[in-house]
Length: 290
Image: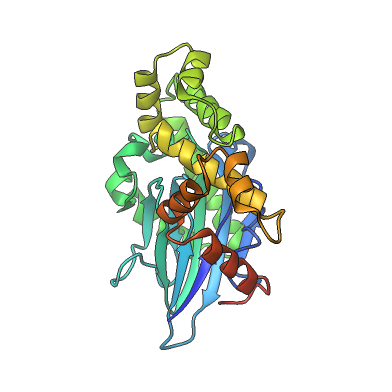
């Protein structure tokens, strides 16, 4: 079994330079204007794994909630088969995804704070887990997948999916706290996770307990967990600018207590050390499977 890395930060068009999926595996589609407040991007994944082989892909956490529509052999985070259509909750842990046979599917990544309207329930209820979309959409997930599979081409599939998501948004109750949750998540991310949560809450005119509730409902992670990811992502962006990182300096500049804190957070959030991450970056620079 071969192992590779997948990383996508907000400003990456398809995936980050550290990701080692074969070139052409992913294709991005424009998000229709009515969906842009809730959906950050729609990706099509298409890849064939040779018979008898398996690829283990380490997907580093970005804190997003995703909707997955599998048209081929569904990837799985366990030994068994994956679900054909599922919602994947926000997480601070890396996902170890097993890829086998013919991979083909659409992935909808929801914007931080915008998940509850499309899920039909608080985002925190599926945090760190993956559930069949029918459990949330009362059978409509499998039905939509069938219609997508019957569409004439990729553009038609994406248009069909987008229209279905727009209908769900129109039918859902728009929470008056949606904008507050999105604004809070954006402020924390923009600060690289260094903005004190009391200041985030004060800027919204609420208490820290209410901030916790907003994040549970709309983001799917606690504000502290979101801050940890934001700090990690800022560190990953800084690493892209350095061939031979000065780890102690990088740690302090990134808001970590010291180099040991940086290493421990890397292990906790990525499952690998910073040095191992750099090894993945080097081995994946050719954009072929590691």
